[in-house]
Amino acid sequence: MKTIISPLADRLVLQQVDSQETTASGIILPDSAKEKPAEGTVIAIGKDVEEVHVGDTVLYGQYGPTEVKVDDTEYLIVKEEDVLAIIKGVK
Image (cartoon, rainbow, N blue to C red; front, side):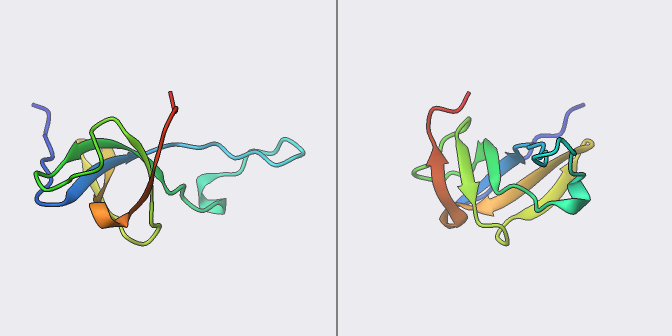
């Protein structure tokens, strides 16, 4: 059975957007050598969230989210006030 995360109040559940960084010479940097991107896709929202919707891609403060792992998938739980911007036009 798949576990469902339902955030409370003004919280969002995000799935971090993976970004592969490559240097100018073509060397791929491992995750341990780079900062985690502060970009995520909204998976679920709490009942008090007003400006962000499920499916939006957002930028969030690097130190605000709480990392959780459910069914071998990593998620971030963040308050709506920690969302810095909604990215429009992302596919």
